[in-house]
Every structure is written in structure tokens, then in C-alpha cells.
Image (cartoon, rainbow, N blue to C red):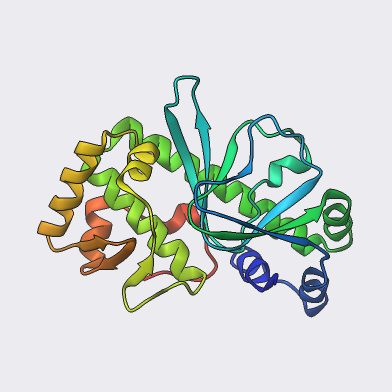
Length: 238
């Protein structure tokens, strides 16, 4: 069940056979969540880490009037609340699709990290990459055009999913709605729809029924001003 976790960790640091075996042996309780269901809520004081085993999820903050800001998307193999080892939740985590989540006790995770420093470094590197993604999104919302923002997000998600073996033949499942895209990029749904039509008209991609097909990767990267360096992946992306 934790194979994706090992794969994700090894994107950010080399693990020994002993490290892999220790991660594989982690005891956990698995729960299933429907799309739109909260995996973690703002204000929670978690005692367990939430490991996304399958499906997609996203972090978000929701204002009192219901407006929502999505701050990142999670792919399988990622711990959705590493900060919960030290802090209470200052944001929520929601299932984007049907998802399986493994709950691992904090004491168990602490023991793993203490006994396996390579695992600890890889996990904290994952957390630092999430901060790098947040910085990149902030630059996008503050300085990039809507066209560039959306192209950049599709490049990022394609690169991340490809690194996890979840994108093939220039295609990947990314079942977001235009509302999700709008909430992630600070755009109106109408503006988002127009940009998606323009990206398709420019021959860069097709996005239909939750499937992204990239027709021109160099062109999409140029449109999004995308450089995968901030993702710090050990596995290169094309």
C-alpha cells in the first residue's frame, strides 16, 4: 500500500534497502474518501499523518463567505499534512477524486524518521518543495497573465504526475473542474474557460473529461514560462 510513498520519497533522495523495508512496514489504517470530502480540516490538531495512496487531493483555505483558495494539488505518494507533526492545521485538505488515504500515527512516523535519517531528509525535502511550489504560484498570481498561469499549472501537474509514472503518451488524468482551476489561479470561471479554449486553439493541449493531452510540450512550456527546476525532481522531465 505504501509503494507510492517510497517512489515519491526517492524523487527527492536515495533510500537504502533498509529504508525501503522500514517504509513498507509502516502500520496504517486505510480510509476511503469521496470527491469533495474533507481529508483534514482547518483547526485540526492531528495525531496521525495522512498519506495519499490513490486519487488526487488539494490543500485549500476557505473564507467565511465561501470563497476558496486552492494552494496546491496532491498526487499519490505524498503526505498531505507533514506540518501536522509539529503544528495544528491552518488549512484544509480535500479529496479531488475518490481517494484512499493511509493514517499513520505520529509516534510511528517519528520513530521512522529518527531511525532512518535518509527517509527524514527526503520527507523534509518534499515539504520544502511544496513551499517552492507555493512561491511559484504566488509569482504566477502576482505577475503572470491568466494564459501563462494556466499553461504553467498544466506543465507542473504533468511533470509531477509523469515523475510518479501517472502520465504516459503525453496524457494524464487531472480531473479538475474549471471551478477548481479558478480557485487555484485566482481567476473567474469565465476567464478560465476562455483561456482553455485559447490553449486548445493554439494547438498546445486538449483538456476534456478530466484528461489532459499535451500536443506540444515545448510550446506549452514556453507559454507557461515553465522551468521544472523548482520541483527539484531527481527524475528528469522532458
